[in-house]
Amino acid sequence: MAGLLWDDVMWFFDPVDVGTLPDGFVPGTSVEDWQTVLDLVGEQGWAFEYREGETVLPLPRAEVVLSRPADAEQPYLLVWPTAGMLVIFRFYAAEEIDFDVDTREIQGQERLDAFCGFLRAVGRRLGKPVLIEHEGGGGSRPVFGFDVVADRVVPLWEPPPA
Image 1: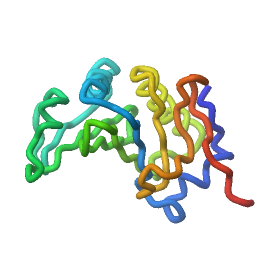
Image 2: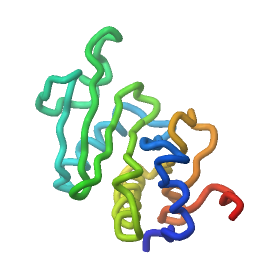
Image 3: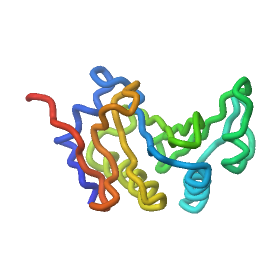
Image 4: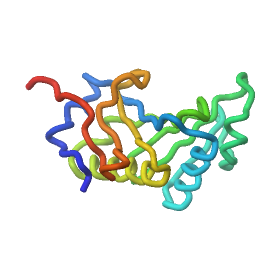
């Protein structure tokens, strides 16, 4: 079970009101957690592409990516957990796994279920919460996320008035 119903969260996936790239994050991580996610991408058979700036390269180990000089090209990892759904991981710091998703690619219950499946896979493997918030939220107010204890994606907000 996804844990979320489309009718309850469709407001969050409105690109006009929310923005097209809500932020996902896993707080309290390490280089080893990043490597766990990189390994998970390969194990799940998700399509992916690693880039530094505009250059496509083989996927390096997490410690290599996270130890790059500050003035180097920005590394990021494009992952397609399912066809037509892109997740962009950004390697800002070892202490937090950051990613974006496109709200236009998550429309309807079936797509929401697929996205929740992705969040569950990451959260279960890390044993940590995976949180989603409005674009540019800065970690201050997650809307929903994978709850480790409940072992499912749960709402973390008060829905907007109807």
